[in-house]
Length: 344
Image (cartoon, rainbow, N blue to C red; front, side, top):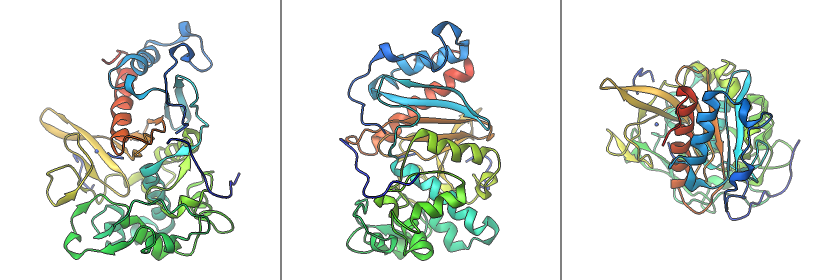
């Protein structure tokens, strides 16, 4: 189903051993009494589900987040899914901010074929192209095209030669990619950006005027994004087997890193998504891939590509910090689910 007109919301590697940044608006106050497993009684939970549920409700990483929806699943669908509090469900549509990047990158690689990507295209996808936007506007005016969004009235993207080859987290890279490929498309109507995205990903994401900013303008629900993650881990995309290729250092202080919002130890950036990891016996090892949004929408798949996780929330007051907060909470829930032990 298409939704026309402007979308508005309330208050808003080739490396084997290679991490994030960054909605329902009902995030004002948690209501613990509403937290019951979907389709199951409290007594019916497995030890793993109970550990995950307890972590979502009581972990210090999660309690500050108020209301949110989360699910853990595999290639067949959700294994366990539940809202924390009320007002946010699997079908709550929200702005997903930088979680848009993974969707656009996936669609772009799907349309071109990885083997056909040029060096310049790969640089735009891993944020080393030197194309940087000056403004953070979402280009949400009705009738705006991808080309308009690139220009001085909106994103005002420019090429900075000194940044070519250096990692600079910024939407300008993908805006340039879209300009050269789908520059005439608008956010809504005939031949929209989302028509193009959905046709390549097999998704049913809704249209909005801000879709002309593919690095951060999409909207959707956990149920919409789930389809992409399931197809990704089921090897249905060109990107499925390329999640670590063309990756570059992306942590603060890393080699050739000019700007990154990543604050949690080491991380790399692949084709439109973060590569997360941890130290195992002194060796940094990939644990998963993600693309968290600034308002708190967090999608993730594990390194083995047999498990995904989503945490959906919309908090438009904390800047990039909301994405990191969601990542920390989601990873605590995931660990509890895997170990069967609640996380503090």
